[in-house]
Image 1 (cartoon, helix red, strand yellow):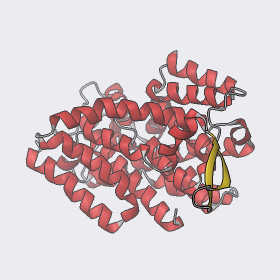
Image 2 (cartoon, one colour; image 1 turned 180 degrees about the vertical axis):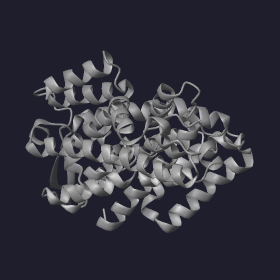
Image 3 (tube, helix red, strand yellow; image 1 turned 180 degrees about the horizontal axis):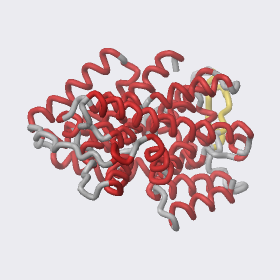
Length: 369
């Protein structure tokens, strides 16, 4: 496990694969697996008699390790919604509002979650475990952590490493799939400029989505609610200090704690097993199917609109904001230098964030986590 942490540190520092996440995750893995350090040790509690009242009660005999206490933010589902708060404050929902049809591309990309869920069941995983593995297909680390902490906390380490690794590898994994499923002519399609979106629309949107999603699927409320609150901070124009704090200081602090503690859950007893290899393979399958689902639905929209939609933007529906949208832009420009797909791809990209949170809520609601 120490060797694996060194490899992840190399990928983060030398190759710059998602360093803001992989550096703390890898270092947390290193700290937790150093012998005798006890960084993730649980507190020792004894039941003793209270000399004053004569009643039996718990008394802490020995304190737990530092990372054990920081990990409670993951275990209790606190860190992932706070990450969503920061993501919402940093994300412009304008492209999605300007082109509401792009929400269909974000929804189509979630097929990887449910197809992989079925595959995990067939491989012998339980329902809650399969749900936690399938959510990797959403390419949304906080959502994967939130659902796994509720349904299968014993798999948190492998799923976190798989989810964040595939998020970092988006520029490597997606282009071959995108090129295999589209023609040269489709990749060359130039899309019309999006209409301007008013501030009023941008203010109403997060409030409306919060109400609708939370009423229909209460279990998705913590993630979607925090995402939309962060976006409201950004767009309302009267809480600039709060918006900047959420985007910078709070986001950075929570990312450090989240990365350290998630890495610390990757201990050898759980991580170095055949089950972990199956999880990593299934995660790649989930991510690939999600990318393919978005592209194939993009091809349908292309046909339905008479060639006005470039299918490449469908790959951005997997939710890795904004990296997946940038990959759509890059592949589109390789085919046609006049192609500027970034803002068009941000629509399904943002829809994918909302879609993965809703998918997590559905799975959480179904399995009663």
